[in-house]
Image (cartoon, rainbow, N blue to C red):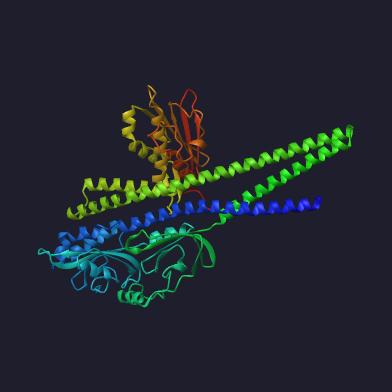
Length: 576
């Protein structure tokens, strides 16, 4: 009878464990899909930014007097050099001008062996569309260079408003694709025919999501869009529940078609984290069920012992049972603490997913205005035959704005940035210059102690300046209610480590800890005066530089933030 009861309990526990695993898996899978959606949004913003970055440039070039004059028969020498200089400054693969018949008469690569000059591109759809009066856009492998690129073109009109040529640019997306490949994630971009244009996996590029129709094949062949590519079908199969099997592996799959030209962006993610967390929850449940069963058995044994024995041995056994029960209760509390830690990790993951979506929205909304500003600056430089002091200063501000928007992507992006030698004292001075209006407005007295020689660290100057700027802004905000606000900056070097301390006489940390303040969206400022991202971003940047950041209350009031960075390798130091 007792054996039968145990079997029933075992079967019920097994069924409950399986059910709990399935429910947990669906829950954690939804979390992974939410995070994947945030990553997809980030990639979507970067693709849109690249497509729209130079969207206005060909129109501006088509209005240039040098371009119009060359199209009407003037010498090409001056325009060749202007195209060459501008392509180098803007980071374009090529800029070129074609006549009405599609023959290239001027190009930025006129010096190269594979120059576009003399080549006929009348067969390209972007040329035909531009000649018809609309902006032409087209992605293809170059007919001359054999290198892929994104082409944008506009018609050039003479004084009588008649077409006299087409000006075009070629944009290289290889840096964007390389950043995808270095990210460790799986993503691909396909055109309206389903041909994979860019991919984090080199084996997927120039394959097709679905077999091409004869009409599609004829169109691609006529435009010479992918010469030398077989365009074989991609090894993938769609599965139920936002999943696919690609290259023999099962992956979560999210896609968006909200791109120009009917293109589609596909993001693939593993469900390993969802599986692992589901097993963890199931294991905790089994552990708790086992503890409950053991507890029940102990209680039952105790009642039997009380009924059978009334002696000192009975009392000793009862004490032993109580001690064992205390151990089991402590084990249960430990399991509950582990469960709470797991829940905390899930909450932080949700915050980071929300932050990734917020970053994607901000970079998307700022990307087009910044690109338009840069194009207008370029037009101003072309019209003025060179850079002026004003355009150079505005250009520097646009560069900083682009750098700031790039920093918002570090929560979820994997774009690689090259470290170099950074002079820490120069970064401090640059940050002080950036917030000089805040210092003057708050009447803050700044003092600092720095070494006589240079303090070189390994890192990225813009990101180091961002950390210092965030800490200085926090210090200024903290001293607002102080009658004589003071901030002291100290730079020191010890044992191949550079240390930066920023001390203020403000209100201090209060009851908050640095770990709490580093959480995204956590701030001690009053409502409307901060998003709570400054210390979160700064902490991540310092971690990327293999440094540390600490904070403590200052004796006499105020706060001391200390940041350390590894020193750069000195030239005289031997390398292993």
